[in-house]
Image (cartoon, rainbow, N blue to C red):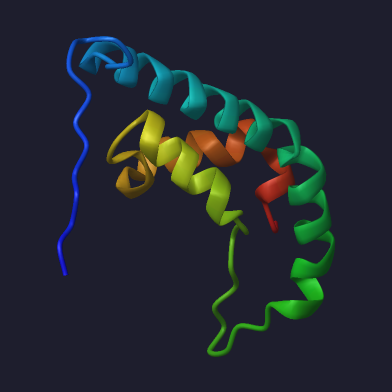
Length: 101
């Protein structure tokens, strides 16, 4: 079986690396804006069910509940932030809907 490959000549229709990067950056910005828009309602809904759904044993009690999409967004914006205790403390302070205490 033969395969015919048709190659267009010339630069028409080609996209530069800069254009691809800009397009991806705009897409990420739109996705982050959409994620942020629903954040508070989503976290309030999760938080309302957290106390009855989270049961810790051995005297341990969770201090906060996080939405994975939110943590991933923060990690993308500030690499390494979710492993920084100071950043997470400030995150809980700035986002009281996450706190369980």
